[in-house]
Image (cartoon, rainbow, N blue to C red; front, side):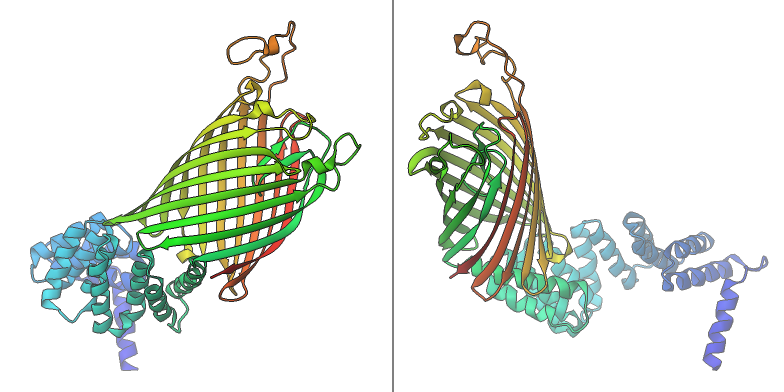
Length: 531
């Protein structure tokens, strides 16, 4: 009771106005005590206000500047915090607590050399304190000095058992970005074993789930099968779940069954080099075309085969990871077992990642597309043969410790077709996310907003200025500017270490001229296997 009464009396005296007769030394001490108590209550702005009065009253007191620096650190005023801490050390070069906080302020300002100098000087006097070693390990991790960081984090964990979870977490991050999934899993398992729920524990669990998925998907072989239904309000020929070609036969939509088979083979999968071959079969069958018998539905049964080999090279330079990827895609589609289209697509990409939290992808693509018409002239398709150039950028963000992934992208596309009506310049904006759910589930929503300006439609002339088809009095066609919205949602669940169940749905609305506008939807369910 006597101790409680003493503390109450002290708090009363500190909260009372300062006596006018008090000297500057006493005033400075009282301001310091008030600032210290405010800091303890996490009222950092009030603490700074009192401590500034304290250093004004006694500008030669090192501990006043130290406490002012600590309060400014708490307010994230790192530059001013460094100034106060440097002043404290200039007044008392042996003030090692101020040196440790100076290192933290320099670290926050990413002045890593200055931070390391302060941490090592402090550690020379207090070799058993784990904090400077932890910060040195963290700086090595940020700089991409993986081997050195692993050694330091292991030393920190041995020095103080309280640091075992966070040291294990960062060792897991290092092994994960180096592609050593077994060591990453062991480290994250240790950091996730902490009984107290925290952001670190949740992030560790998310990485463990991702590792299990990557370990399965990084198997040498993977196969999948999906069955479903597809519908449209206009006749479109779709070579996969995202690519659709409207044929210009308005009001002739239909519903059809679809079957998709996919397979992946990875002949090479190392931390530096990766090679992959993916094959995809997409088949749709038209039982009807909604009205009339002028079109033979059998002529619109489509089978599309895609081959998709890619090679990726990864390299780290200090904090930066760079990945160069080259993808070649070949697609051929058959209508009633006769060739309808064929394209070659070359896609080099460069990915730059300065952090585990995000990376940026730059890419260029070139596609050569050739059509033919096996429908007996019921559609005019030959003049759509085209060469397409595209430029794109994607930004990938990984907030919330890997439980959420965001992708924002933009693509500029230029299509030069045999028929001028199909020359266009297009823009696409992509918003995509991956959400990790409990019980080994994943949700992937995606939205695409596209705009295409068909450059010569509505002019009545081709790109050379000549009247189309040489016809006298040619009537200018209506200008065509397509706007398109695509939305999709994919759900998946790991039902076994090597098996995955998934369901997918998508909706597309294309606003164009009546002959080319369409609505498309897809729904399907499938199962995948990794080995």
